[in-house]
Length: 60
Image (cartoon, rainbow, N blue to C red; front, top):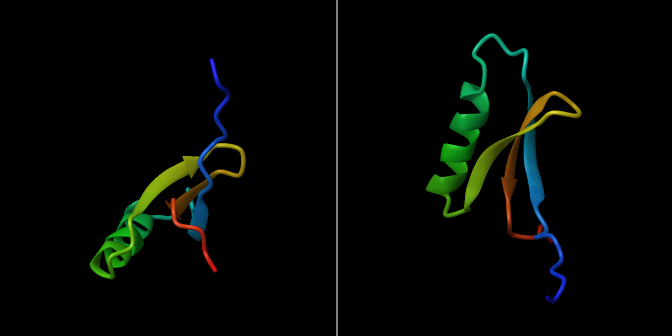
């Protein structure tokens, strides 16, 4: 079985998990990125306790 490399992601923005509105700021930011034709999604980084808005597109 051939080995595959993990897909590279670019972090567009970080939002603290303890925000009073929860993940909403991250969701709103991801939606704004979608409106600009950037495929962004929200993931949670358990190690640093933040919501990340990421894209699979490499930033230049």
